[in-house]
Length: 113
Image 1 (cartoon, rainbow, N blue to C red):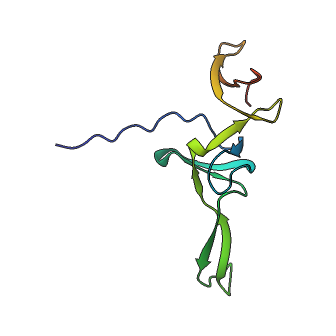
Image 2: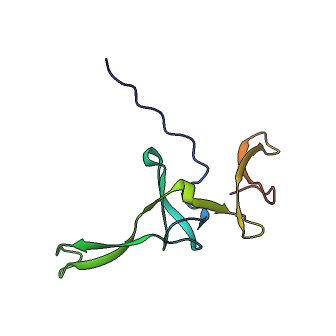
């Protein structure tokens, strides 16, 4: 008997969102979401959770060496930044005037683009 894989949960954070890190080594820093890994509930945020990666010499980097790059961070450690006040906010969902379901910032009630 084959086990069914659970469907990943709907995430409130998307690629391109401005988020603030609320826990971990990068706490307090904010940046744009570059990538969302839905299966692992993680996101890669610009300029946060930097790790050193050792690279072999290749065509792009002929000497190789140590490269600093962003690592994925758990979604629970991120909070969306309110477009109006610039403070971290929770995310809600509501219908806009066209009847379409959109994400809204709980603090200001403003739609998140």
